[in-house]
Amino acid sequence: MAMEPPPGCIQNPPVVVGSRWKRTFRWAVHAVVADGNMRMMVSDQAVAEVTPLRAKRHVSPSLNNAAPDALYWSAQMAAVSVKRDRASFMHIYDHFAPRLQRYLRNLGVPESMADELVQEALLTLWRKAAMFDPARASLSTWLYRVARNLYIDHVRRQPHWLPIQDGLDRLDHAESARLDSQPESCVDQDILKQAIDRLPPVQAKLVRMCYLESKSHSEISAELDMPLGSVKSSLRRAFAKLQGSMRAPR
Amino acid sequence: MTPNHHLDDATLLSYSAGALPAALAVVASAHLERCAACRTRLLDADRIGGVLMQQQRVDLPSEDARAAMLALLDVEPAIRPPAPPVDIVAEADPDRLPSALHPWFGQSLRALRWRRVAPGVQRILARDISGGDLMLLRIAPGSKLPLHSHRGNELTMILDGAYDDMLGHFGPGDVADLDGETNHQPVTSPGVPCICVAATDAPLKFSGWVARTLQPLFGF
Image 1 (cartoon, rainbow over the protein chains, first blue to last red):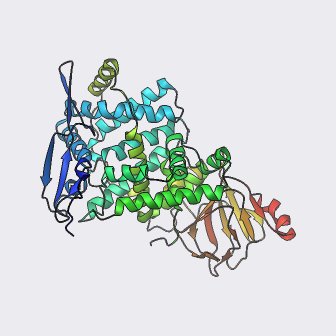
Image 2 (cartoon, helix red, strand yellow):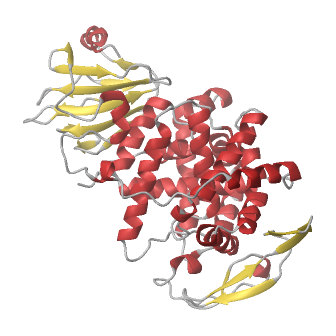
Image 3 (tube, each protein chain N blue to C red):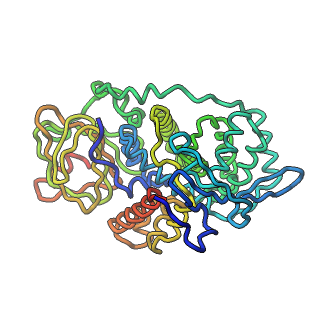
């Protein structure tokens, strides 16, 4: 279905301009030169160019469904995987290492351990770059999983978690290799981000307590003095909304 | 076989956030292993985590940290993608327990050593699990369990046989994801015993004095 971009939405990438096969990406690239290293940073503020992409979805689902930043990161990952490119690796490091560090610190991980786990997460990326499938998950999702798994293994001390997650990963890997076409896999992160920002305050709070403080339903229930059933039903409603935003036709 | 009863959305979010108590997470993992639909939903939940992680405001890393990272790359070889997971794909073998249960109960259904805890009910408790209880239950065919509700969360996955309750028919691979609002009375199907793995993060409570008498036998 053809859609005209509403006036004023030019600041919000991506903008659908034609059929579902044709999308306009606003590619935000911000170059920082530091100590002779060119560091490419994707930022919301600095908009450099607008690139229309016209690839058939079944040929290259990742290109069509990806948000611009997801597209940028998958190109960096390809360079790491194929060429063992250190500059690309360091672009990824510069962006994600401080965010993973902040995520782990928020979960109460002591600073030195958080540093170690961030290094471990990025080393995992270096080692397993060939396992990264941009059609299935964006780099932020992939790294989130890696860091979360390391947290559960090292901090929560569930010794069997890592091998089980590896098994589930490989299962998904085998499955997506077997399938001809991908499901709606690589979701536009900006749309998801906006949907998170639009959650009603209580749902937003519960989602953050869940993800950013890693609190169980019972812990949330006790801390907010809210019945367990209400905690769960609010989280269900939040998830339904966010899933709806990921699945919505764009 | 495709399961018909799945993990609750709230359970999946908690699993994705690394916040699900350990015993419940084992049963959730066992179901995820058998259920592609729930793995897809889990990926959605992980995307939310990815966005929240990326949204945080941060500074650029220090030059020391960058140099340390680069030094680590020198000693790390790349790993090729491993072969397809033979251990997990081979789920056609009905004797094989889900991989997530192996550390707690071994690999084989037939090799399990059951302990009788009540007439028609046998059980194996997982040892040394923190954050709740994890157990296998083997309930004789055609049995009616006492009416009970749950104080906390309970996650049960059927491994063999089946049961029916007010929520429907539960067969192999299905999970019952219950909380304090559910009061149910499962009846196992005739034919073969119903074998399931159950995890709780709080003790179950039974209603009625007969059930209260049974409770110590169950040891929940």
